[in-house]
Length: 444
Image: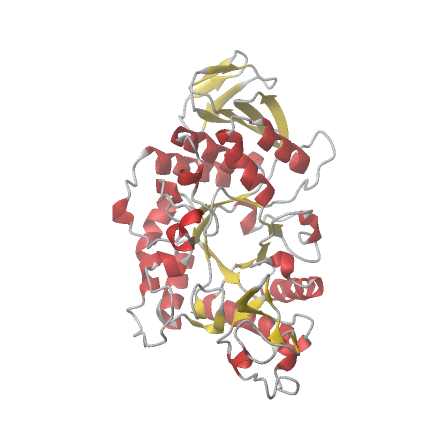
């Protein structure tokens, strides 16, 4: 089987409305001039993204919306707070010229109340308006006293649910994707709230996208349940691994590595039945919807072994912009605290954490045993964890110590390896002593 670009992807996530420091409410008063858009800041950031070793960039919503991007008004016009379509085209061209793939956020479950087709519907015409079947309408009233009822996504009535059973709506959205590929040459989509999307729509979407580009990547945002429901040969290539997200941070906070080991074993263990053998879920330790990991962790010394685990466990690792430098943000204080303006001058880009991440991105992308290999647990206590990834005789071993004291690992795989983090040669024929809060990635 030919290798696809996303087989060894390491993804950098940007939430543009926060990243660019724009108003959180669109006044529609701005008429951006080409060449002055704030989205152009991404071009200046490309050298650092590459230095850190990322090979793909994922943008959360950046098309015209009322507020946060998920309340779309126009799927084909870049949000005027960010710049022009031509500005974003320059960004995409620069990313591609630097070997970086581009993933956009496909918000296809719902639109904003300012979406033109919805705005044409009134209490007087909602039973016969030409766009009535684009949404889920019925008699009654809405949260906004429209004089008719419509379904909002999970009770959020500023987010109007689209009727994805309607062939006209489905064709409209497929044409949107075609436009994004034609105009920006995008390489994949993150499908917002994929767990809410109608399954036949997802099947049609896959056929459409793979027809545009055979290596087009479809990632679905999913929370709970069996991810095979959405991640299968007829629908999505990958889903977000929220099960492991919780286990990743709480295993360190509770000093209970059994939690994440259980999830990884249930999902990927090659020695017995598992749920997702051979599949690549998207793994993360924070994003624009949850507290930053530097805030979530009770002991900041756990950041380094946690990132080591993120980049060497099965899956496609995603790092949220700013977290590579230890950016903090507490969800309890609102989403805006998670989505600050990005200013690289605020960070020490040569500090220990980004230095470690730059090594981990490289070892993930360049080591097939890690990005394509199977998974086998080697050692487990409450505070220590070791596992192996292997493919075609090549082996990579991850050692993690969540304790403050050094610990000696005696593992069953013997031989001479190189630690990808320190560059040191390590012989596993004897016990391996790992410093407190330390980690190793041994490759042969």
